[in-house]
Every structure is written in structure tokens, then in C-alpha cells.
Image 1 (tube, rainbow, N blue to C red):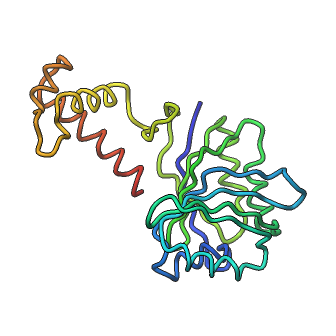
Image 2 (spheres, rainbow, N blue to C red):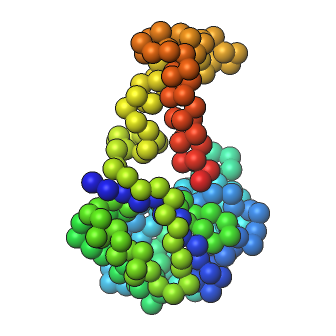
Length: 218
């Protein structure tokens, strides 16, 4: 099963008002689309976002969105909250959605909305379906393929692109105290547990850490 990690760039005219707000204001640091329901009502979408930022300013901006049909904001902790939104579909959104309406294609949440009109997420499916997405995006949205390969994410994990050996190296490093503060374990101990040279163990750890950083910050 193949996957693409896509970075979509929205021209200003193609951005949702809340995405524009995120770009123009420093009140919102991150907005992750966690789940959605496109079939609850005709032409109405329900969506659940995890938002890092100022809840009051987010709500003020949300109130001004013409397609807003209702919402509920639930604090998680200081500086973060869930936004459960109900919104009327637009022609632009329907065109966007149609690019992904292929039997073999699945979009893997969360979808990571970022400032400057960017959206990052993974999609899995047959190669022809993945290629079709790139060809059918509406005007004003361009796609950059950040990664492509065999999908190997484990349920409940964050590292979709780590190899089995990299996961093993991270697990061993954690067990020996390599990530404690202050550090208690060493690369040599990781290497001994893995049965490899210290340089090889260090290479596994560095590549795994790079993947995790890339996954978080793009």
C-alpha cells in the first residue's frame, strides 16, 4: 500500500477564512483536523479540530465566517482547545473533496493546517488513485509531494516513516536512559543491545530523530 505525504499550498483566494485568519494573525499556532463527517447532512460538514492558540480570538474570527452553522469550543489545557464545527459546503470545497473521492484512496488524519496557506497530510491508496489527486485539485491549490513509499504507520504511533530497526533503536535508547535528562545511557549501550557497531546505532537514532522532527514541523 503506497502513501504520499502532501503539502498543499493555497493561494489567498482559495483559503478558508479561518486559514486566512491563521496566516494573518499570531493568535493561532497550529490547527489539526482530527476527524470529520461529510454525510451527516446534505451540503453540511461536521469537523473536529485541535487548535493551539487563543480561544477567544479564534471564536471571534469563527463568528464572522458566513458558512458557519454552529460550533462548540472545548478547552483542553491553557493554550489549546477542541473546535467542533458545523459548516455549509462551498463550491470550492466540493471541488476539493471530489479530488479525493476514489474507492481505494484514504486520507489519514490529522490534517495539519499551517500559516501561509499550507496544509500537510498523508494519503494512502493505489498508485493510480494517488496520482489522480495531484491532477484533480481545484485551481488555486498546488501540491508538493514531501514523501512517497510503503505505508507503515502503527495504530497510535506518530512515526509513519520509521523502519523497524529505527523503532527498535529508539525503544532501546529509551530503555537505557539515553533520552533522560540528564542523559543516563550512551550510544554504546544502545549498540550493545542492538548487536551492532556504535556508529550504526548512532545512524539509526539520527535518522529516526530526523523523521520525527520532520513529521512534527514539516
